[in-house]
Amino acid sequence: MLFTSFNFFCFFALVLILFYCAPRKIRWVVLLCASLVFCWSFNHVLSLHLILSALIAWSAGKLMAKNFASETAALAQIDRKDKEQRKKIKNTFALKRKKVRTGSLILLIGSLLLYKFYNPVVDVISRTDASGIFVRIAVPVGISFYILQISSYVMEVHDHNLEAEPNFARFLLFSSWFPCLLQGPICRYAQIAPELRCERKFEYDAFVAGFARVLGGFFKKLIIADRLAILTSTIYDNYASYAGPAIIFAAVGYALQLYCDFSGGIDMALGFSRMLGVNLPENFRRPYFSQSVSEYWRRWHITLGSWLKDFVFYPLTLSHAMTKLGKKLRGKNIRAAKYIPALLSMAGLWLCSAIWHGEGTQFLLWGLFHWCMVTLDTLTEAKTEKRIAALRPLTQKGVAVLRTLLTFLCVSFGELIFRANGISAAFSMIGSIFRGWQTPFLLTELGLDVPDLVVAAIGLAILFAFEFMQERGKLENMSDKIAHFPLLARWSLLLGGIALIAVFGVYGAGYDPAPFIYFQF
Image 1 (cartoon, one colour):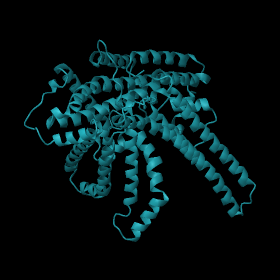
Image 2 (cartoon, helix red, strand yellow; image 1 turned 180 degrees about the vertical axis):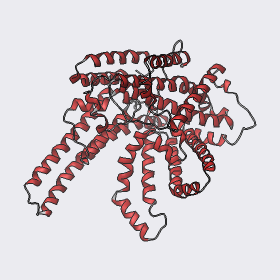
Image 3 (spheres, rainbow, N blue to C red; image 1 turned 90 degrees about the horizontal axis):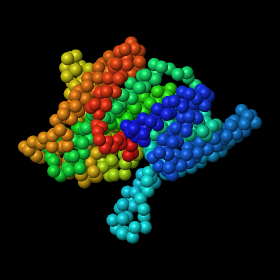
Image 4 (spheres, one colour; image 1 turned 30 degrees about the horizontal axis):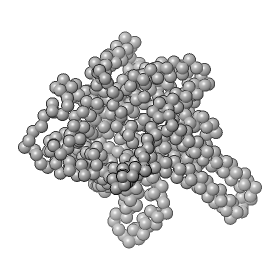
């Protein structure tokens, strides 16, 4: 049941009715049942993986919580002055917790890697072994997202930053919350566990604001992204037939398609959740207005970036090996000593990000490219900002526009690698950028007629104008403002939005909802 399918509309309408008709104390049970049905609708058997993974994480949390309680009881029996004995007790219990954390993470992350890489390995083996003894397996829906969510829970309980959840059913709701299941955002337990208790009264304004957010997501997905997908897929799937301008268009077009598709899906997730009284964290903050690649990654897929920073980058940076390396480099008076440990940790972060996104080698190249760009930003940011600050105000604005355009082009180049059908296709398309400029290509030959191209262009112009105004601080929290419009203006705008999507969205006879791009990760 994709968000854009008729089945999901019926499903969500039923969930709304059951949720608001149920007594407030058991509304969370309605949401748990809805989430499990949503997961079950994609694959009956594989939905068991989500339940089993949640059980592993919850059990690990319970064991560690019991361990903390036992440690406290043991320390209470020891004289505070006996520091050696107290240290020994702490180390003993800490080692047990570490074993529980490590064992559970091996099971959780290991299952994620197994599902991600089993089929590609089987494909390689099948090329040399035609016996057919290896079969391909289906991948559980949303595995990349819910594994990161529940893994963060295990690590936060281990670090004593979070109290373990005593109720498995409530933890399972957190693990399977259906608006987040397909493509995020990747939530922390402390962020949404209170929200999922559903103890608030019905809030009309929040419901309307959520509905408005959903409509915005449909606008991005059905009017812009699904049209751009037709154009870009034509070039990427037949890249050998195109060069120069067409390849540049494919890179830029896919960057815009990816943003509208992904942020549109997140808008829907946030909107559907809010209609049910649950607030989720934001995942985007107008990334294409960034003036550096580093800033772009602070604005794009914010929840994944936060997860990688907290559970990959910081642990690596603060590890014994990195601390020792930093001291050694500073002792040799190496100028870049303070940067090297952080940059090496950043390399680990980008490696994890590349593996999380996919098994193709082009993802490793994509990760390497962005690591190089972020490294360049890190080494030059202070001097760059100092030089810009010395310019005249008007010149500063011109430089800001130029930096924004250059950042967008750099990111688009990275998305060219990301979208290419394999590493060889990526290199071929990169090489094609520099040839064939004398041969023009027509957009109308890429699968869309003129009216559809006009609709896509107008949709992009509206989106750019809207986000430009938001960047200037004039249209922030627009869905909340719509909820406070006068009754006639509010519903005229919302009903007009429905009509706009119904008329200009990519629908029609035999319509098959296009899955979200991040649905595959």
